[in-house]
Image (cartoon, rainbow, N blue to C red; front, top):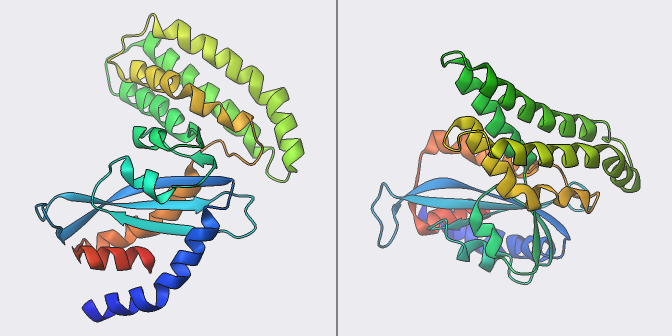
Length: 253
C-alpha cells in the first residue's frame, strides 16, 4: 500500500494538478462531499469521520473533469481553499459551508427540496389519518415535479432556448410556489416533516432560484451526486483508509 501511495503521488499528481488548474477556469461547477474513515488520522480516533470532497465541471463544459479532495473535516475552510481564486456558479446541496466561498454564486438543488416533501408525504402515509397535512405535502411535491417536468422538455434545446422556456414556463411555477410556501409556513407546525420541508425550501430559496439566471445552470446537483457514487459504492468494499497519505492517494487516483 505504501508503494502504491508513492507511485500515485509521483506519477498521477501532475495530471491531477493540471486538471485542477483547468477546473478552476470553468464558469459552472458542482460540489459534494461524503464521509471517509481514516484509521491513522493525527489527533483523531480511528472511528472518527473524515471527508472526501468532490468537485466537477458542469454539463456544458467542453472538457468534463471530476476531482476528489481528501480532508480531515467538513469545515468551511476546505472548499474555500480548494476553490480559492475560482469565480462562477457552484451547484451545491443545503450545506452551509459552501456559503463562505468568495466570488461564487451558489445554485441550490431542487432534488433536495423535492426529497423533503417526498419524505414528508411518506411519513404521513404511516401515521394516523391527517388529510390536511397530506394534501400540503403532496402539493409541495407537485410544485417540484412541475419544475422537473419543464426541465425534461429542454433536453435537446440550445442554451438560449432553455433560458426562454424557463422564463415562460418555470417562472410562473416559482412565483406561485413561493406565495404558497409563505402561506403554509403560517399554518403548518414547523417541527413536522411537512413544516421542515417548507422551512428548508424557503431558506434555500435564493439559491434555488439561481438556475433562472443562466441556462448552463442545472435545476439540481445530481451531476455531483452521480459522480461521487462510485466512491461511495467502493467504500462499502474497502471500508476505510489506513493513513492520510493513503486517503490522499485514493483521491488522486
